[in-house]
Image (cartoon, rainbow, N blue to C red; front, side, top):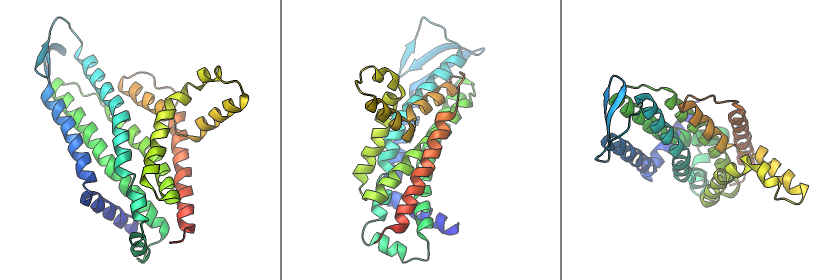
Length: 275
């Protein structure tokens, strides 16, 4: 296990050298600074007396403070499930292809470490880099809103857990593409295609009416079950933040199972690959 953590540390050092981690951290800090400076709330007895956003004060309406905080947190969670995932994918896509470059992989394989430990360490290292920034942003936003309003709505923190979980699945797919094709651009495109098609596959019943052949319907069903349901998991996270009934967690378990299949396949290919 110590060797896996050593590879994680090496991955973190590489991310710092390439300014990937720093860039991610700076973007997260800018978002938190905007939230801190742009939103000013005056509350009286748990109700909003006034709200100032980007220097403009809102007048003429009354909103319960609890509802206001939940609405802002739901908007942040939704934004993270789009922009956060897109940025995380871009930031980590090159980790495996770079490791497999001639010279790098030769040096690593010469070390007293197994290929399983090497790929697992690389995967966990990339995941920890993203998880740190996501929780920095989620926890920072939660603290800012809670301290400004006095409303400590903890379900918002669960959206960070859900986001890290779905990224872990997508990253496993990127690792599989990275080991197979050794191309970071293909890994990025593959991950973005999953995010793009997930809302369409969720509404596949409406698409069936436009298809003339059963073969295409079976193809859509196959894609639906062979890809992580990111759109549905994003909806689950939003409902948790809004304190609405989340329903079944089947999309999350399905995605985690697929993530295990993706990483296991990548590991099997990596063990058999000649360098």
